Image 1 (cartoon, one colour):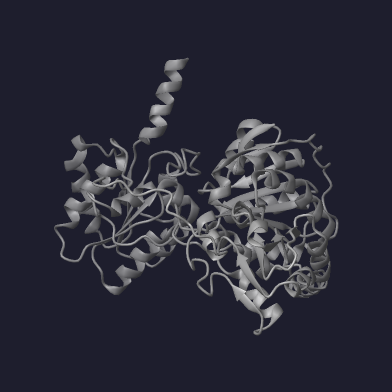
Image 2 (cartoon, rainbow, N blue to C red):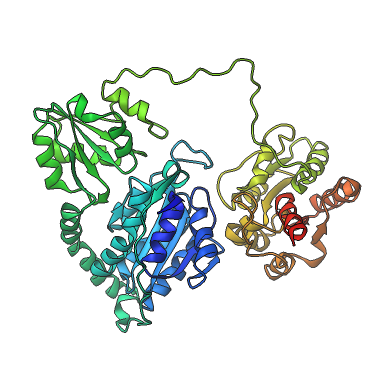
Length: 527
């Protein structure tokens, strides 16, 4: 037995299923999967990728070679990987390929709470959604066998509450890695229109196999049959736990568990025929609720997020599910009085603090200055005491939004982007700005790591000046500074100079993240 996070259970399950490579870009709540494999399975090829698209493509390449691969990302990373992800259902796979998407209902550390199951449905591939850490571990060999049987990638979806909670896991003997066996059928992989049409027709034909697999799946089926039950519950993924915590048998409620998609339609119809109404419990958007409504018709009584019986937004809880089942839920605790809120803040000594101090000082000299932010721990510059950034939309948007604002006449238009985010999604925006000779100033705040997710390697470390020059930024307008209070006069002077340049300029404030520095100092002291 092992005590593991849900993420770690996924990781160990994948290793024991015989994967040869894991490809990922760090993003909460998925990061610990790759970190666990890196720490415990040196035989598995693993290095952080520049973004989720490159990760998906590398995993597909390993599958092409006949070996099993895992690709991991958080839900918004699915947007970045979507091109390769959707097309991988058209090419099909050779070695088993599992795409792990970690969703974040309630947006604990995200810009939205999109539901990755829609991506699986859109791509028309099998989806697995474990309800527990043990199931997350057990599903991995099943997922790879299913992938190789159907010759399709499999999407596995977990949520924050499962990813970041621990449970004891019973482990099994690991499987050996697949032998090298590159695919010899080129037409599967060359998506010229003629080939793609044939492959798409094959994918459509496979839908009956996917449905049959779901109907027979060990992860779908009745878990609580109550004679004469008027209310039935379809419980998906982690929501199954919340239903069972409310003792549905005592409440006279029947339960159908669904953890594999497409929906097992015959099973659902048979289950619904035994009840007068159904409650759909799913942690995420009402995907299943909408499909079941279509399946059973308008006359059947359905309850769920769309009807207000469960909250329309945010993650479910045992209490919210209990209330929907008619349980009188007493408040478990009362909030303490007179406790000051403690919003997140940049670390003491962080170089981003000095960057924002300098930017605020210079921006105050202009009536219409705008600072466009990006995704990273420096996004905290939007909060007091800095209140320094005017936007933060998605990875890489700082540069392209600054460009668009400058095109419209905003001056100065300043972009603030981190080192890892710049290589993830910022380089193409900078190339657009260079090609259009946009009057923007780009600040690449370089702390030599991917700090927000715990200090993983940053793809562009020690390469940023070369990248900017290669993209066409004029050498005299690529400036490097050390963000320290003693250098404030120099930094503000450089910012003023570059703001007034009629073109693209890049300022790179570079100082190591305080957290990784402390970690190194502790390690050196231990040695």
